[in-house]
Amino acid sequence: MGASEDLIDALVADLRQLRHDVGQPSFRELEIHARKVGNHLPASTASDAVRGRRLPKLTVVIAFVLACRHYAEEFKIPVPAKAREMYSWQEAHEKATLTLTAPLREDQVDALPRADHQPPRPHHGKHFWMPERQRCLYLLIGSGEVPGLGPILAPRDCKFMAAALQNTAPWMSVSMLINPTNQEAHKAVCHTLTERSELVVVHVVGHGFLNESARLSLPLRDSQEDNLLQTTLDLEGLLAQASHHSRERAVILIVDTGYAGSAIPQVPPGLEHWYVLAATGPRGHAYEWGGPAGRGSFTGVLAQLLQDGIPNCPYPMVTVIDLAQAAREIVLRRTSDYGINSQQVVTWSGSESIEALGLAYNRPT
Image (tube, rainbow, N blue to C red; front, top):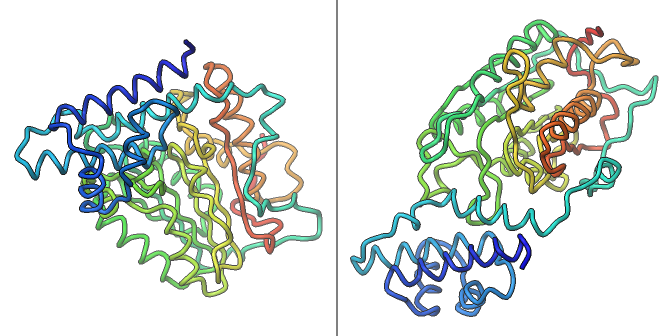
C-alpha cells in the first residue's frame, strides 16, 4: 500500500471513528444536521466518505465533522476533541491530496495551469503608469495570532513591507492592521475600497483556510471554528467589493497565505484594472524560511525586492509583473533548497487593460 492510500485510509478511519464517538447517527441524520449548520451533505455523500473508495472532497470532510459535532451537541453527547479541531482535518486532507500528485520537476513548474487572464509581458512604450502624486492606498493586514494555530511572522513581515514602501513608493498612503479582529479587518477593507484613489492595494498575510464552502478566507484573532463563514475575512469577496467601488481605478490584491492561488477569481464584473498576486498555487502551503533578517515569507521576499531593486529591469519603476516574476524565482529557489514540493509557486493574474503598472521606484543593485 502506498503513502497516498495510507493517508486516505487514515482520514476515512478518523471520520468513521468520529461518527462512532458521537453515537453512530445515520447518514440521513448527518444530512439533516449538516443542513442545520448551513452545509450541504447528502446522505449518499456522507456514506461514500467513510467507505474509503476514494479521497472525499475537503468540503465533504468539513461538513461531515460539523454535522457530527452538531448532532452530539443537540443530543447532549460529549463532543470529542477531534470534532473541534477543524484545522487538523484540513491539514490531514491536504497531506493526502499532495501524495496523489507527484512532485513537480523544475522544468515542469512553468507548465502549471494559470488563470485565464494572464497579463502580457510589458513592452517598451506601452505603459499604464499610476500618477505619483495621486492618492494611492496600501492596506496591510497581518494575522499572526489565530486560536488553535501556532504564531507566524506575519506582523513582522508586514512592518518590513511598510518600510520598503516608504523608501521606494513614498506617495503611497500605507495603513497596517496587526492581529485585527474580524470586525476591524472588514471595516478597514471597506473603508479603503470606498476612498477616492487612483490605486488600491490590499495585502493580507496569515494562515489561509478553505472554509465550508471551499472559499479561501483569512482566520483572524477572534475567528471561531464553528462559525468560519462569519468570523473570517473572505479573500475571494475582496475583488467583488473592489468591483462595486472601482471608480475607474486600479486594484491589486496580494495574498500571502496557504492556498493563496484559490483567491484568483474570474474577471470581476465592473472592475477594469486589477491584479491578484498569490504566494502559492491553489493547493500550496505558504512557508517561512527564516531568511536574512527574518525576511523568509513571500511578503518578506517582496519587501526585499522593493528595497534592493530588480536587476536588468528596463523601466525606472518596478511593475507588478516584474515584482511577481522576481519573487517567483526566489521562492522556487528557496523551496527547492528546503526540499519543499513545488506546488508552492508564486502565481498571478490580472486584467488585460494593464500592461505595465508601476508600483514603486526600482533600486537595482
